[in-house]
Length: 511
Image 1 (cartoon, one colour):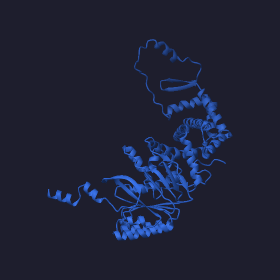
Image 2 (tube, helix red, strand yellow):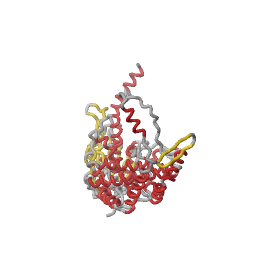
Image 3 (tube, one colour):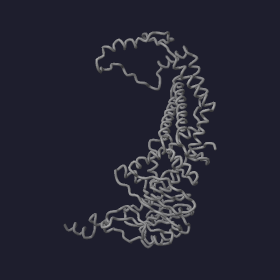
Image 4 (cartoon, helix red, strand yellow):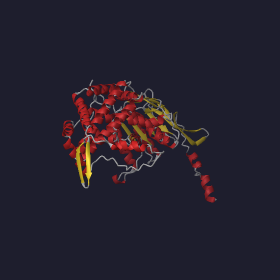
């Protein structure tokens, strides 16, 4: 099987992949924050479109999971980092060569880029040969790389680059500067007196002394004097510079498209593993989920919101994990409980887990079994748009109608606090109608709501409740527990905490 991609295997990859934008639900699920953090300082690879493209095939997801596991094992990640750094320099040299004005200056940097490219490719092939590789993706790429190193074009590139550099390195010449003139002639075996001078005065050195030598900056470009000198050197040694001309003309497009593709795509894995490494160092678990399309029995152990976890880790705060499961005919989590108790975070977590799992990435948690969805839809509260001349309730209804029209039985729908802008009875009626549609559709759903009657609407609904500390209802545990809704909003505890009860207000006003 021939190598195609370390991201897509033998699947056909869209030619317009780079034009893909972030999915509509990214902001609601805080995945935009996560991808921004993962791709930080990697703009040159344009990785975001790769994170905007989920997979919908179990074999394709397993293909990526196996590569991730290879990279986590042994020293292969360090070897790939070394290859990536060399390729980064190659690109910098090539970009520099295009900007320079003087011919031999351009050609010199082009030659250096080609030589470094050969070294990078050969070094990576050697590293992969000794690595404990088990994934089909990296095994196929290693086979491709081994074959590439024996191809006539690469062998010619390596041979010509080495010969050209050796020919230029062997050149010796003299510069004669007198008054306002500069002359160049061939080296004629003149003695290098600098060595004798250093040896003579070395005996007088006593301890550390001040260095009075002028530090000359080394630049990548040339001024007109340096270019003129180089042109005269080229006339004195035409064979070496003719070889340089021939090299640049004969190998003008030396970069192999598959290796360039690998160089970019492997950063998808490297960037994600580097991002979660900091959390793993704190003892936080990540796992490779089981992705299933055979049933909708999903589960997770010690899972968490990745965006919130990164923020908590940066601030030195603890990360709260939650378990969940749906069994049999169960399809919908109805999440209720006190405000600021982690309900929305739980809903985001379910969405994040499924999306990251569909990318083939390790997901936050000790274990997870996730559904291979076809689409994710979210409905989170938005500010009212005064330009469309519609009210908040009408906007909500239109958005939810669009979701229900587009969703299929294989979709995931996440709704957060719907119909907060209308009366309670209207909210109950509308919410029941919408959940009835989702139940009929048999789609997976998370519904965060203040309407606890929804939790017992059907056998497909499961009640999840935000917990509080026993004996102190004002203290949230941020644990979302699978139990019947208790009808307690704990609003009085919040009012007491901030001295906003009737008695507290009366006391403060009469004081």
